[in-house]
Each structure stands twice: as structure tokens, then as C-alpha cells.
Image (cartoon, rainbow, N blue to C red; front, side, top):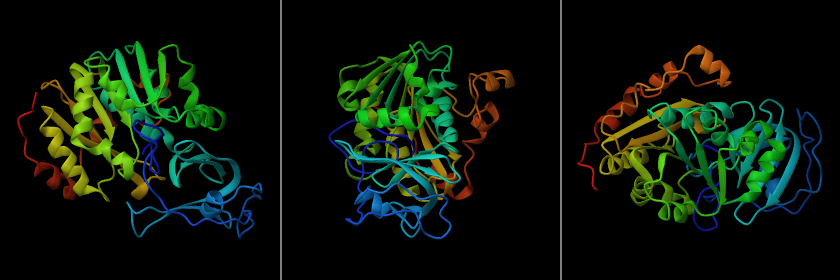
Length: 347
């Protein structure tokens, strides 16, 4: 998740994408290096406690209670940045195979090598499903990847981004410039603050809302609740569409089923899609898409990109065929999805 940093609400702890969650790590006071077997280059000294616990013998290792019994490891070439912001621990390192890597509270948010798959899909799935998206709201996404993709769309006239942790934005501009390039767009209005409060004050204002959220741990759990989707619904125009990070079908099928159930009580059209991305748990991440327009067909993009448009927008993952394919679920997930009854949308 993806990525992806920031969101709304009170100061938050760990998780992918936004500033929320909770990952315990042992504190160590000793200095460290990457001098273990196979290390590509020595790391800078002086980074203590959190970094020392996360990087050992030249390897970063991600574990989390949301994906028990498994871990993601990347070989570290150089530690580039480490700080504690008001909301979370921010770590950036250069890996030997995935470029620069952004980590928030111990959880990988993005890597330069594979970030494009998540960013392109969470942006283009909703935008290419809307006939005329002009005003877009992004909740979270402090690394800038979602913003980069949104501003490429010629119909989009304005983008508001709500990111609660300004430090993530500044770190991303320095160490992930290929992602943060969208911050220079004239279409952008940046709101550093609480996305919840912003939406409460801006009702029926947006054609598309994209929530680049963290995993559902601690305060971030609120981003996966019916009340949050109700809030987004009120901030959407009458034919508006939303797209939110939707977790992994291999790990969180019960949560996905629960989310689909309450989404179907709010919106006439609800779909789940996914993409592949090597450095997220189980190599996949999903998206929950909802529309206030009963005629929306997420499975068939209303804006179909030509090969020339794909190349002009420098897309490396998204195209109209992958859009259609993203909604084709494996049988175990499809059965669970079909088991969710359609309820009459409220309000």
C-alpha cells in the first residue's frame, strides 16, 4: 500500500501508504553497519535504535502482524535518511536491486523499481472509469506517486491532496524525485492536514476521490470502516467515483468481504481489482472501487487509452487491457466476492 504515505486523523503509527498502524521493534543503542555477508557497501554510522533494529547484516527485513509467518527482505547498499517525524519513523535506504526505498514505521511504502504498478493502477482505474473527471481529491499519497499519475490526465483541471505528514513530502522530494515530480504541477492544491476534516468541509465537490491509505492497524483502521466511505460519498459529486487501497486477497479476504458488504449498502456499483507488485506482502495489492452512478461499468474503461497515449503518459503497467484484467479474480476470491449480497444503497 500502497504509498504511499499520509492521510487524515490524529497522529498515527505504522502501516503501508499512510501514517498509521503499529509495528513493535526492539530498541538497540549500539551503532551498526551493513558489513554482513554479501553487503554491497558499508552503511553510514550513527543511525540508532529504530534503524538498527530494522537493518541487520546489510539486510532490511519487514515483518508485521497483518501478514504473520512471512517477511520481506531487501539488501541494503546505503542508508540515506532516518528521522522521527511528528507522526512516524521515516527511513530511506538505497537497495542493491530495487533502487531507493521508503519505509514508514518499519513497513515498505514504495521502491523506485516497482512503485509504478500501484501508482498507475490506483489512479487510472477510477479516472478511466469516469467520463469526465475534472476535480480530484487525493487522501494521503505523500510520496507523490498517485499525484504524478493523476495530473497526467488532460481532463483533470484541479487536484487537492491532503497529506498529514509534511516530512514525508519533503523526504520524497529529495530521495524519490521521480515520484514527487507531480508536486510541481500547477493543477495541485496541497493541504497539509487532516483529510477527514477537509472532506467534512467540502461536500459534493469532487469527481474522483483516491485514498492512498495505510494498512488497517491502529488509527488507520478508520480508513477501512463504513463511516469513512460514507464521508467520501458525501464529498463526491452525484456521478462521483472513489478508489481506495483494498489490501491483499491472499491475506485479508475476510476484510475485503466486509468492506464490499458495507460499500454495497452505500453505492450502487462496487468492484474489487488488484495488481501485482513484488515488494508488497504476497506480491499483490487490491483496490476497492465505488461509484454513485448506477451506470458505471468499472470492468470496461470508458476512457480507453491508445498505445500512443500509453507512451505519451510514460505508463509502464496500466493499459486498457490490464484495466479489464484487474477485475478477473481467482476462483477462491471470486466466490467470496459473489457471496456478498447487493443491498439497496442508503441516501
